[in-house]
Amino acid sequence: MKFPAGLSIVDGCFGRGWMKRCSSALLFVLALAAAPSVLAQATQVGTASVTACAANGSATVTIAGSNTTVPLGCLNQAQRTSPGTSDVTAGNLNVSILGLVNAANVSSVESIAQYANAPNTTQLTGSTQASSVSLAQGLVSANNVRGQLSCTADTGDRTLHCAANSTIGQMTIAGQSVTLPTPIPRNYTLPVQGNLTVTVLGLPVTVGVTGTAVLNEAVAGGVNSPTVTVRQHNVHLTLGGGTTIPGGQLLNVHLDLVDDVTASATVPNQGSWFTAVQIQ
Image (cartoon, rainbow, N blue to C red):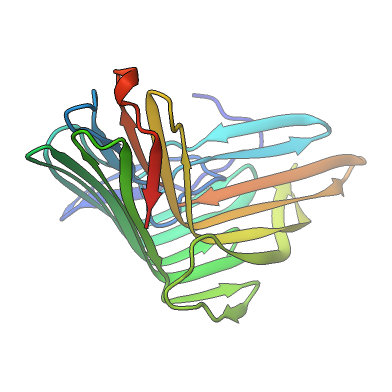
């Protein structure tokens, strides 16, 4: 696979127990401590799976009007497509991309995917945790980040019932400590502003960026359709900014960094489609 000029990457080491494997991954959108995806299955549900990822997303950088977007994929993936539990750990994920060193660093990561059946009920749970998270060259950092999304589909119930929660020990934005409420309210939004250093043609370029960090975010979609999807993020960081680089060309950077727990239920029979999603 060939990558755009100026693209750099730091190998991420993934492992379980004492067995480790190292692989390279590209990222600008990073799923912070977790990216679980969940598919529910009760009698009316046709398919089911649950996936947990330590990081997931993509990145876009624009130079002189030319866009470069790189997908990340699911890092430190734990997945179940049948009843059982998958538990995957990683010591450290450190990613640089498109000239941005230390775009994301996540330490001591664990991703867990659980798929359980009971009479007339299917429950799928995705969870992740990390001892420390540093995003966008430390512009946003946090420790003891934990998140979980659990969804239950019951036979005959056209409401998908989910519970989502996030906890964060300590958090800083642009070097300043942030006091967080306990528990963290749903979709708790904080402004973010600072500078990133991007290497372009071998030269460091400072780019001012602004955006938001949304904590304990939950989004649902697909009601009254075959597939209902619920997404939960411990931290959803969106940043954008631009500057002029040597030669007079405009450099734009857009980051969408997110830990992602996703629950989806696919129902083939239109008469049994979910008509509502309840998130607690």
